[in-house]
Amino acid sequence: MPVWEKLAEESARVLRPSGFLVSFCGHRYIDKVVHILSKHLNYHWLHCIGFNGNRKNESQNNIIEQWQPALVYFKPPLEKNRIAKDLSKGVGENKEPHNIQPSDSGLAYFVRMFSAPGNVVFDPFMGTGEVLNVSKKLNRTSIGIDMDSDCIEIAKGRLR
Image (tube, rainbow, N blue to C red; front, top):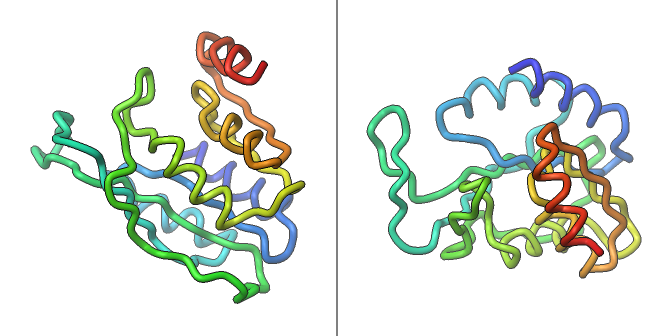
């Protein structure tokens, strides 16, 4: 949870007015994450990303998770110039090493919806660089960080 607190504080600091934070969150901690993020940013929506196929991963509560929550927050004021859907069906994939990562098409939806060409997209948990790769294809500048050096090397290779 301390990482979420830092993410919320830093997002509130660096986001432009009307800027968005879209963060994928596990089901088990959603109540805690919502509480933390809401201290620093304004809640906008909970987006549901449906997984393709039959997921084998079970939560610690013996529930087979068939969707991934994406929390959407903003820094006021909210510009109401976009219409977003709250469900993406069949776009989630099990990807190694981060098996909760949405597909590139699912990520492209968020990048298009919450940024414009030339904007900066920041991924503080970049994994193997899926968000950065999609952002590059959509003419956004992207910045990513991760603690896993193996993931960083994979991301570098994908972005060359």
